[in-house]
Length: 109
Picture 1 (cartoon, rainbow, N blue to C red):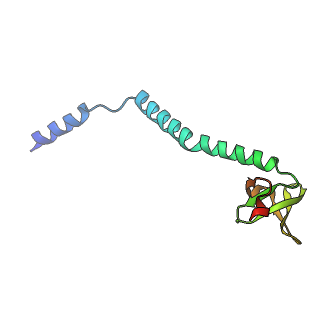
Picture 2: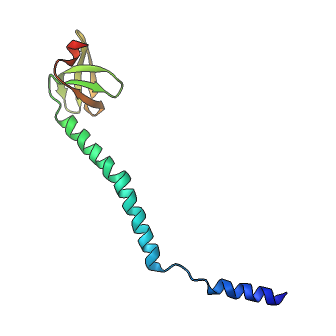
Picture 3: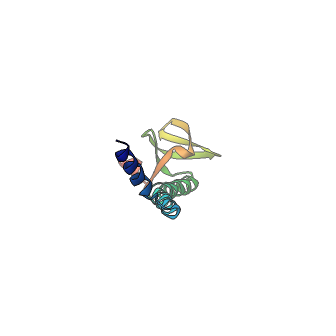
């Protein structure tokens, strides 16, 4: 019986571990995949949204994250006063704007 145990133990010692270089290479590949599939696209979207928010001005017709659409009447720092319909104005954060509509879109709705 001890003959089988010693041969099994010897066979386990003979198997090699992956080299350190292979492990580092595998980690580098995972980091590269993570970068190109998650970090880079997210930073591009954030940059586009930041430029959209900075380009807002009085008279811009916008759509907000909640689905509201209106025309900006006043900008106060990080907030914008938006006219939803005649006589109805709300103050919202500029960062909640998800899209700028072409001029005259609200009149056609």
